[in-house]
Image (cartoon, rainbow over all chains, first blue to last red; front, side):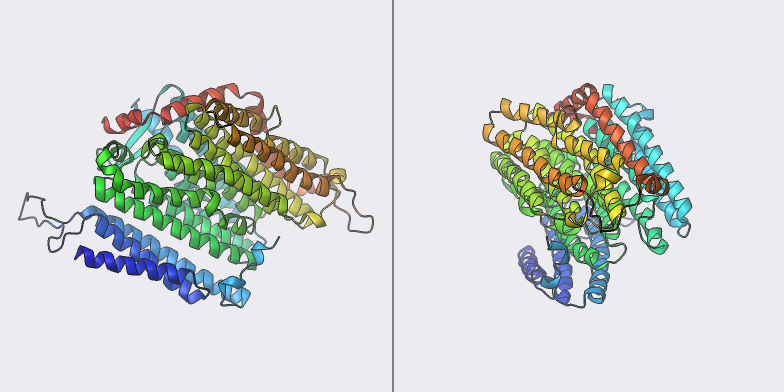
Length: 117
Length: 506
């Protein structure tokens, strides 16, 4: 399972970077989303992936051995990271809309006003 | 070391910025109230910061475990001497930027409303990044700071602002993602994100093979934020577009946070002398940063862009100190950081005054400032001397410390490059001086308003600039205590074991 998800993460990163390097706004947004999600999945796998033993303990159980249980900390990290990347993605979408309104272009290579000497 | 009073002084700057931001949001429509809140919370933060520096002069560390959870499980806040100095400087800059922004940063009132909350939250993020002793917490503070700075850079929605803004947003998103990847790797191998616990586990040579990857990811992430050589292209594309009060504070502070975290990680987690290839990379890259930055500055025609490129070149100076990795060199790097924060922010302030007076930032369109604006000319000229490092101004002491440390480490070629870079910096700044100040105003062209009239209208701007100017002068003529303090801070930074002890003891 870890190998499968690792390959998936690799594909997500590759697709994210590929899309980020494109000129079109829409592809840029998709690239940002894929890249962010690849990072989140990477955190999950790097923190040690344990399936079918969720990090929940019911009250009746009392003290239970924690061996073999999933580590809740990477999940907490991912939750934080998802919220933050969602915020950034929303901001990027609004920003690109405003750029389209002011610059009337869908081509990132045309946004060179600030680079002129 | 652990008396409760000192903990409050550490937390005061952070809390006052956060509360200030919240209050600004509450008084969303009343810009005057917002201004009062911003100035008050900046002053409170400044008092807290100065007290903290005073406490740290005799105490080694001030630590706090948030919520009472012991390290490494809780979130640690920790201030050492370097962090104390940086927080004080942040508060100082925020006071002056608040004063500067009173003279209508944005052209319309509607846009001005959003400025202060974002400004305050950015400062809270910066202070948090200086204080935190936890890598994931650092990521969160970084995001607080970055998202606020996204708002600040694009506030106003002018065409060039948006175009610069999108580059800034995307590149910083990538940089933060790299930080997140490094956190994942470090947590997976050591089971902790607390900096002290990480530093302890990373001493194990068996782990080093895996954590090399994390070291490189952190280098890239912080390198992008600090505008190190191969990663600096976003900075000149975006920094100059926003209103000048925003540019000044962002140029003074944001890249320095990247530099701060770089110094923190590559002394505590990955001591550079154990990672020779990283040290070599850092040395070469900082030298190239100096050179490429200053060459860019010479090529530019826009005053703000000249300043932005000079900023990149000075980041090279600071990281050169880290690359040498002796206590004297890191002391020089810290001194240079403090000096540069003051001078660069102030130079952007004066550039803002020039822009306001002449209505342009292009060197070709500005002339005759010396005849009409003697006070501004005086400020600008002294700041050029301070930036370049002409004795007796603060830049001289900073550069002296760096050159001295470089010579002691037998890095003669890079020291020569550093001195050549200073000379070229002088050239790039004197170009502005000669073109904008010394040339006579065309008889046919529109006359400038007299400085007295301008001063009455925009006295806040001058107050902000002169305030920072006096701090620079004070450091320039009274450098010995700061040199001693930075030397103590550098020795502290190079002793990770004392850091680990301070966090883990309780």
